[in-house]
Figure (tube, one colour):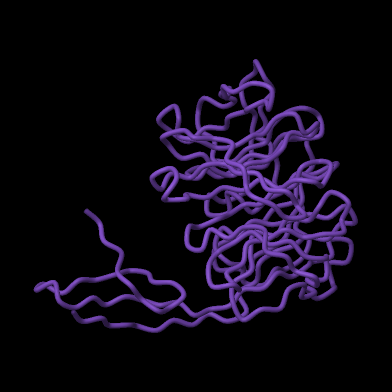
Length: 308
């Protein structure tokens, strides 16, 4: 049986065990990420810092009314869901799992509730499941209990269903679960890793192994809309009211913020250069054109050695 190895650092990666099993070396990353806002209406403006912490803030998700911000942070010592004002003030911790990873907060259309995913080990054997928590605080409620991973939830535009990714069919696909029905319904059948509901009733999705953003309408085959989203940015995009905003990545060049209309095909329009982003941290989009990203402010790590 697996045993937890106690260590005092924030995060341990890449463990290597000595041949006699008595020494363990690993990497401890002590970096720092904060959330910044990029003004898509003014490509010449410098990114504006929103949150200030010596820890990790990422997965930014603005509320529908643009007044509050949900995000993931380990500022309390473990990854939890937080909400704050749009300037980072009045921060409130919504979860207290004290260890299990949490990610991808997403607001309900009325701004009252937030979806997220987490593998709460003591409850569901470490598989990611979907949870809902009130935006003003309260006990989280588990919405899925599948024996496989359920991740990246989003409310439908009318708030009556949730879309999420799952391995229920044996591979990552997009699923839809109405609140009035217990059983989830499969939406994609040829791969789907991250999804966003569109304003026209369709579902946009990306894959973790193929470039692009697709659109699927019930009963029809998926169509490629944005061809130039790289797989490593499979969750670094958002659907707006009239276009899609995403991270555009070109080898040996800086990251760019780009936008693409809902018409199929063709590269998007590059807007402005982006700072170094945290890996697969997601982006947020406000109604007034601010794009929120998690920026790597400090990137440091140490090598640690444990002996028993």
